[in-house]
Amino acid sequence: MRPSRPIINMPSNTPTDLWPMPELTRVRRVVVVVDVVESVRVMQDDEAGFIERWRRLVHHVRTELLPKHGGRLVKSLGDGMLLEFEDPRAATAYALEQQRHMSSINIGVPTGLMIWLRIGLHVAEALLARAGEVWNVYGPTETTVWSSVERVGSGEGPVSIGRPI
Image 1 (cartoon, helix red, strand yellow):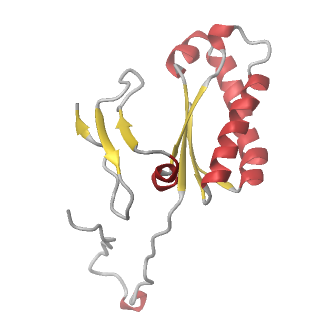
Image 2 (cartoon, rainbow, N blue to C red; image 1 turned 120 degrees about the horizontal axis):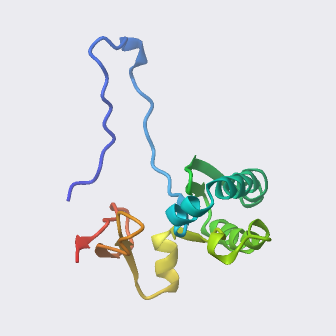
């Protein structure tokens, strides 16, 4: 497999004073994916309540948790967030505090309508130092637990979503 290279696609009428382009550098980051468990069902059963609780949750993440742990909100969706951290310990501390905070989001909410989160941290090299092996499992939807799998090794290459199982 060839190493990946940045591709710059410039139209032919681009002014030449943009060249030379600044060199692009890679940095390693901890990517955190936050996903609401059974979001479609919970929204269907209580759309207004879900939206109100989700907005409160995202506000708390933006104003309290991310500044405290040095994280950045990359993208917020209606039932998930993509976050970025420089340090795996900070990302882990965020995830643990976020899960503890969920009890306050769910106060007074019937059990079937509570918001529960799945939080995944993508830090393969940090995990390899502590565990014998790490596997990347991927499923394209909530209804697919996983449909591909690949063992993650240490190194600088791209991480595959795996081969179909």
